[in-house]
Image (cartoon, rainbow, N blue to C red):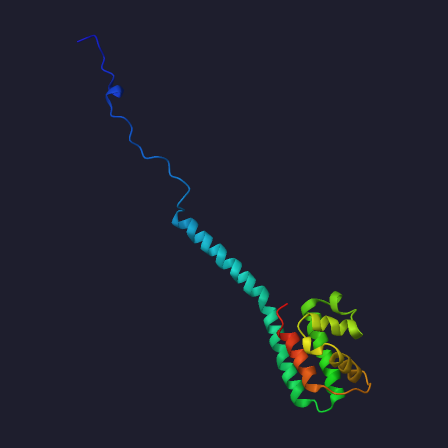
Length: 153
C-alpha cells in the first residue's frame, strides 16, 4: 500500500466555536459586587449624616426644656444664646463660629435658617442676654432658635 497518505486533519469539519464572550451583560458576580458597592456608599452617607441628626434632636430637646424651665426673659435670652452658639460650633466648626459676635452673629444665625431672629428681634435678644433693657420677644426668640436647629443647610 504505499503511496498516498491521507491528510486526516483536512477531512475534519470546519470549526463552529462560539464567539468570545463580551463584557455585557455582566455576570451575576459583577452585579452582586455593584450592589454591595452601592449599599456601602449609602451606609457611609447615612453614617456621616447620623451625628447631625443626633445633634439636632439633642438641641431641640434642650430647647424644649429651656422653654419650660426658664422664667425670666434675661435668663431665657442668655441660655438661648449659649445653646444656639454651642449647636453652631458643633455643626459649623469653631473656626467659623467663634469669631462672630453682635450683629455678625445674628446675621449668621439668620443666614443659616434662624430667620425669626432677623432685625430688631435678634438685637433685642442680644441686649437681654447681656443685661440691657429691651422689649422681650420670647416667642420669636424661641422660634428663631428652633428654625436654626431645623435648617438643613
